[in-house]
Amino acid sequence: MTTAQEELLPGTRRALLHRLAVAQSEGRAPSMVAAVVRGGRTVWQGARSSVDGELPDGNVQYRIGSITKTFTAVLVLRLRDEGLLDLGDRLEKHLPGTGAGEATIAELLAHTSGLAAESPAPWWERSPGSLRPELADVLGDRPLLHPAGRRFHYSNPGYTLLGALVEKLRGAPWEEVLRREVLEPLGLDRTSGQPSAPHAGGWAVHPWADVLLPEPAEDLGRMAPAGQLWSTTGDLARFAVFLAEGDERVLSAETVREMRAPAAPAEATDLADGAAYGLGLQIQHRDGRLLVGHSGSLPGFLANLTLSVADDVAVVVLANCTSGPFLSLVGADLVRTVAEAEPRIPEPWRPLPEADPSVLELAGQWYWGTYAFGLRLTGGGGVSLEPLSGKGRRARFRANGDGTWTGLEGYYAGELLRPVRRADGSVSHLDLGSFVFTRQPYEETAEVPGGVDPDGWRGIG
Image (cartoon, rainbow, N blue to C red; front, top):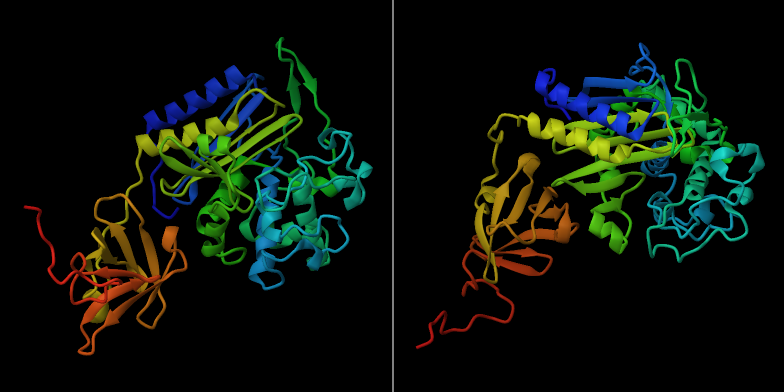
């Protein structure tokens, strides 16, 4: 999200306000506040309120529920990047004796550990965290409902375990580690475990009457890493920029890309809905665009952060009601409004600073069997390989520094691409994970597996 942008056009701003107003009115939310981020900064803010003359702004705290999980995931990935753990490690290796130690760190992050969705009764979101002082109280007698790694099953206790893991390896409380390692470096000084004025009060709205009931704001105790935080649209807007670009003080751009990649097997209904889950981030394919972020809810509050990296648009929406407006839909609609009304302006085309002749000679058309592909040079010495039909396997490759490249995505992720040369130095073919790509379909002079019929191509008379 680095493209410089002017303020949004008046028509776009009105469309955003209209969508927010409809959501607040039809969803019967006591208040709702939203922000749009583009070019690394907030370019629009809007708010609606049921109280005349009292509009919340980007500094008013709301409880953000499960968006807290994304912050916890950032802490865990910092531990991985420092070499203190591997995502494939069993929890038991670092946090023994939980009863759920067979789950890996990655499975906990992606909600594929098999753990139950909730802690044992009473309902943890509306009861004091002091009722669950130990991990055993959070997990209960039957913590595992499914085989680990087999299916996506959202688990709040799973993120409690990840918070406990952070505390064990850092030797400090989860919230203290979060403030030191994430909130302070990113300048999120209005994000906290406890509410800090000005903050909204949480309300339940009667489903059949326009009346309100105050909701309790419980300290979640052990469950805090799953949903404790309070924040503002201003802070979450800055956090959205971090999730798009990374920040070397917290996590690299490569690691936040890893967070945004699907990491859990999707259920059939999820596939139909275009939904997936990464490492602490929800993923949605909607209106032809890929959206990442997270939603959150606790009694009295709803929250949503939605990001389209390709469109350079992020949206934060917060409301102080237990149910009513579907903020994930509102967030997606606000992203679409900006992306369609004011499409991202691409960076100017610039030629590469230099081109290695031995790489430049590889550019152009290649064939895998009879499938035509184009190989193109990209920045940083990389290359891309794409089907000329526009359909089929495609991938970008990073240079390894020895004349070979490693796939970065799709079918060819991790696979090695190397040019095979003849004795005279000319290129015979490309080898991509044993697949042979030749300059002509089944080129006779190349090392095509199975050989090429010596009579060549023919018709049928």
